[in-house]
Length: 468
Figure (tube, helix red, strand yellow):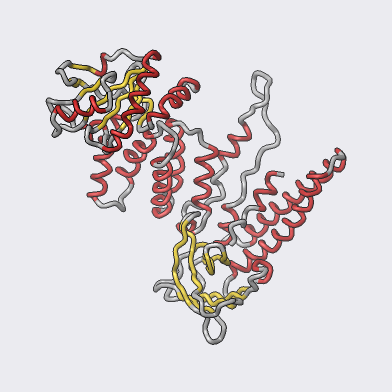
């Protein structure tokens, strides 16, 4: 039953020298520009040509010099109205004609076996989807167990029929790019026979492990044309969001596995590395900075030969800042003074949790955050939580800090600064903006950072609940 839905969503997005794509289609406004674009990943489109209909009623798109780059293209009227086609990059010219009211069933191609094969399959799939939808509606209302069982068997048989057809098309056309696109969307077979563990129980993770191990089997990492389809990115997204445990150690292992597979093609590798980096640089999951450190250290600085030396140098500088501050490591020692000259040493601070708030006495955001910080300290001191309020401005005089302490009543915090200018807070503590908050455990290990003070208690509760 699940396979059926996966096949039904296969096309839910549906959508040398110079080469041409000639299109005959009805247009409500013959003076409008119609665009030809291709996917770049699953969320971006790259426009390659824009034309108006000619006097003969045809749209004539021309490729750049060198011909089309293979991928999944679309004739685009608007972001929500488009008609897709396969371009392998090997065609001379493609002619397509269709009725916009029923694109899949009406479209006809000349000069493109790729699309003849693809759309014959899609027409078949459209017919089977109607049958499947009917069976699903009946299942939704049927209460007779015997009839429910019959309907379910029919639905399972339909899924097997669709699965068999897609494999038949691929086997009959092994050299077509269209076959690669179809193959990339075949779901791994989920085992129905589950082995028994030595303790006599069924192996509850067996099906998941098999599915995960085979997840990328249908995707050709050696073909850079996959970048210009939605399938490479969507497979990566599903894998890392749904199949991989979101912990640093697991992600280091899985990112290495996928990146090594992607090295079959330099452009695919470059795209995959960019995608994974972007995903985990912008993640909402706290504590995954180790993934970025891993990518910088083992991929960008070893295998990213497309980058200029100046860019690599910036990666290296960033790595040198991040690595000592990785989640789980002890925050580098701080020995600072308060306004009266009393010395405070972070490693000697007795507290279940220490909140280190790096701020500037003249920073507007720091001033806005100060009342919440004071309230947090007042409400949580009895829980063994201590706040260090660290002024980062070497160039500001002591009076600025005293003014801040008085104005925002932060005297109950540990207010310290670095009058001896021993620390470069930017490079040693990654304070590229203020306020910057670090949450430390009893041993002064970093467990969180850059979390709004209002969310710190929730974070600590989550941390304790999950035994992190």
